[in-house]
Image (cartoon, rainbow, N blue to C red; front, side, top):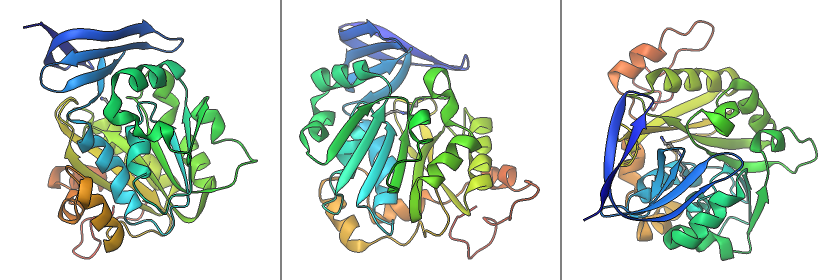
Length: 296
Ligand code: SPD
């Protein structure tokens, strides 16, 4: 056997995994990084005591962060990832032959190095010539005025503490919107709708201050607190349910979770969240009708 490792999440819950071995443990300039060899999930990346991704369950999170945007966006030639240093998000994006270039801005080079060495199934993107890895601060990067715009921007960060704190506010979302091509899509993780309901609601509202169309969606993320996770697509003119069949068919050949049925179902907003999101003065109230396709 091994020993139990527990994530204590925001002082509210604990979830444990049985660990055979510690494959990597180091302190970077930003955070404590560990890779644990777990019995059920294989190698698991842990940052500052919080589970980030595990080789045998990461497909839920990465497919759901990436594929709803990739199968519906008007264009996908140029893609930006803020964060994503484990490589899973880049791998999902690069499944699409229509992608010409992906820029990844990751703040912590040690996350990239550790995952590259110990999580091989997430590492396929690193050898793809379309990927350009920039080690730097994503918040500063999206403020730059000299960049070509992107068709899709993905935010793949940690929870909103430490270096990720500035990734959850309207100012950052405004900078991302300015960097999008017309009709471009911004996709991000928006936390646990159960254990981080306030964060989820505040993030959706902050996105609604900036974008015309904001569509949260839901799915499992087995290593994350409460398992139920949320992601959100934000844009000014994109239809999050208009799946391009050819792209979805390509993804379905290898995806372990995502398919067109999952895509449609994921955008159904549970009643309790509709109620909470409704009373938001000054913003158009959609989401409670029959014909809005789940957009809020
Ligand atoms: N509570 C953990 C949330 C972490 C979300 N990002 C994980 C990064 C995986 N690429």
